[in-house]
Length: 421
Length: 151
Image 1: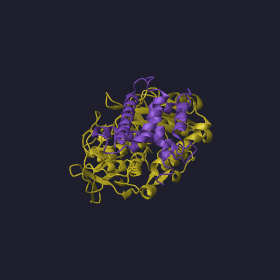
Image 2 (image 1 turned 90 degrees about the horizontal axis):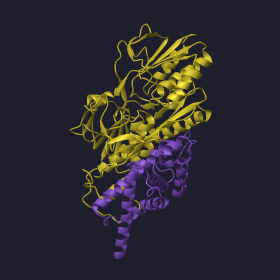
Image 3 (image 1 turned 30 degrees about the horizontal axis):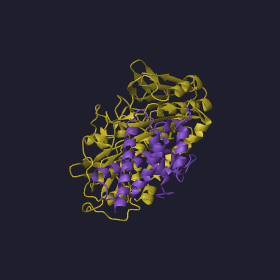
Image 4 (image 1 turned 135 degrees about the vertical axis):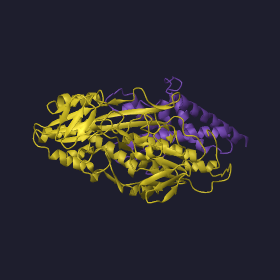
């Protein structure tokens, strides 16, 4: 495939790449294609929305359809601030209207029933079938079972929906000296700093409103997985009378009726259990035989194009893919751009760019008016054919500051804008 | 005719240089002095603009493919700035816009953040992840983007 020039003319290619300006001649290497390429994107989160947008931003010679089950997207980014009232769900709600209006993305609100990869078709639940030249899947995650856990009683509030409002109510109804318990699954999980951030936001809320309340953090990992200095300082200094941090505490069983969490070592009672179960790639990935990485939980892809190593013409980005990059909105947007570029190139008969880079960044509130940040950058490593962390590119802010707290909103609003408008 | 052909060959040579520079920089090879050189970066930046003017039929197919690698890579690498600085560098928040700045200004700004040795600066960490050659091509690409494209 590499270096192959297909039936599309070079001019067509340059036009697709947005570089046709100034080239007056029309050199036709071979005959033009019969029809416009059609790319279907499934899943309208940070990955899928960005892919759909940038495909059309970079080329008006392709048709793009975004299939999403919900009418709009409720961003998990900043959603912990709903718990302390600093954000409303409305502020974190994004429609797909701007992708349609500004970029000509066709939006279909529907659930995908199955993928017929042989025929290159997507079948919707209502029975309609849509054909694609390339298919990009960004369906996110699904949760694995924990014995005894009733997810309706013990909320995770870890999906892009309104469940965070219910969790807010549960926390608000905790009596004096009440206990909030959050459990963190083994990595990889979505939004590495998120659970620690939530513990801080709730602890800050308790500190300000409910003297005597406790926050128990059960971490299945051996230590804080990210931004450890800032979070450990928060747990052991800022919230030392509130937070009890327990590493290496894998939740083995939950009694949802009694509000009890059972680990190998101990049983914990709490008024509100916020159990975040272990993750794997979305059901769409598993049901279509795409969860083929070593753990059989995630989709193995070629990081140059995010094309499945299992099924050609299907690309998987965001939290479902198994490149080892973090699972979070900012980097899903980054992966989507690499994927969109690669798909346009592949449709023109060229190979994907050989040295892609992605980056990850996140601001995390620690108190009601301070925040920290983390960042890292990844590059394609030719010898291992994997995305690898660039040495020295990862870091965190030294301490939570008010400036970072304000910058957090700039960062999030920029990311929302680059993704949804 | 001859003159045009020679110009094309000259541009193709520049193009190969760009490809080579990108190759070495992206391999994460320890930044060599030859790469970390303002003069070469300037040539790279110029070459990226000039490649657009190449006569399409003058270049062998392989060169076309190489050009496509460079140009496309430029776009997908530069777009990594847009998560924070807005689509095509048009920021709508308190984070500065990159759109509308010259390539020289962009190179200066990004390099200053790379070399400021401030571990408490997020952009210092980001900028430090890119070689000077990559910064040059990113700057070149962004400096050619129209204002408010796609709006």
